Amino acid sequence: MFDWNTIDTVLLDMDGTLLDLNFDNYFWQEHVPIRYAEKHSLEVHEAKDTLMPRFREAEGTMEWYCVDYWSRILGLDIARLKAEVDHLIAVHPHVFDFLDGLKQKSIRRVLVTNAHQKSLMLKLERTHIQQHLDQIICAHDFGLPKEDSNFWTRLEKDVKFDKNRTLLVDDSLPVLRSAQGYGIAQLLAVRKPDSQNPEKNVEEFQAIYDFSDIMPKSGDDEV
Image (cartoon, rainbow, N blue to C red; front, side, top):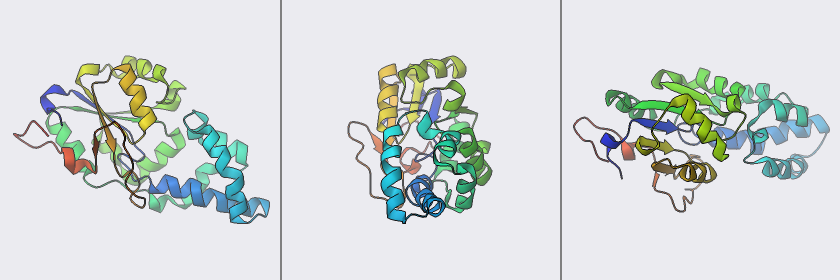
């Protein structure tokens, strides 16, 4: 798939890539509708009928990822509701071994997430994944989602990576296409971002089932 000797930096998405997307899918598709229905004296299916078009309309925008935006729009404390189901936050298999393997090869490990700062902090507190990373970049600090081509220009200024010696692993096809357009040389999708849902169609991208597929090994530079 690629030679580790050609890579200096690995950019890693969080939700669906390092962490199981089951938490996020359950939260938005089930938990928020339940709490919204309670607040407005609705049946849960009525709440879903109201909420799902709003969610779809916001996808790919900075608002879609913003806890404060949805708290204001829905009249719910989204951060508190996330904490109610934080037991579902889970790290995908082989992630820590993979990240530690990159460190052994002196390859920089950078988390690049669209998640809002409040969601990010909750997940770091739950998983301690930051202990296996060199840098964390939150798109909200830039005011641009990863789907926006201008995001990558800003990221390169902050992280100072060489596009030709960088690998991005992300479960979002629009994000991968945006990065591809910017010129990031190595791109990998994730076949099963949500452990409770079927395999995803990764379309034109090479993809992994989990990080054991690309595990750096001592004395083995290619995967």
